[in-house]
Amino acid sequence: MLIIGCDFHSPFQQIGRAESCKQRREIAGFRKRLYGRWKTPMEKLRMLVTMSCELGNSINEEITQYPEAFRQTHLIDVHIRSHARACQIAKEIVCLLEGGLPPKLGIRKMDNCYPP
Image (tube, helix red, strand yellow):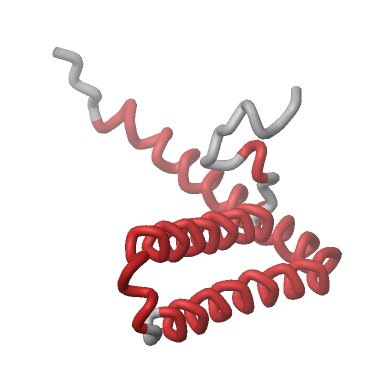
């Protein structure tokens, strides 16, 4: 069993704190420059995603009020769930773009969607 003593661990804590602070400043500066350059397109994209989600919610509320809808609940359920999932993925992509990560490098790895 390896035991790390206080004398060995202490310098790394100090270096780690300084490096962590430096990285946070770099990331904050990067995000500020990114927002300055892409502010308008990102706000438009965010608004488009919001409008799509709200429209889907409105359609969902309207469609469930029709008596004919109860005959095709499985079909309606698939549409509602698919749209909700698409909205969730779109919001994740917006978050990745705002953070400076292109979707290709983000948490979703879909090799068949992105050519090499």
